[in-house]
Length: 77
Image: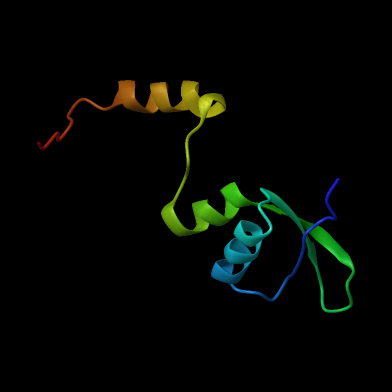
């Protein structure tokens, strides 16, 4: 078992991403400046801050509904 990765609440998104990548983890503990627990952060949440929503299998029904409501698609080759 590896020790939990801890990230200070005042770090930038890129710093959080790089630390999680370096430690090869998808989840980290967020602490304030006094090392008190604030919450958790996931690599998915970090990536969504950068690129927007990420759809996975759980979101598939929502994505299907959204796509079925679109009537026009712009597909460029």
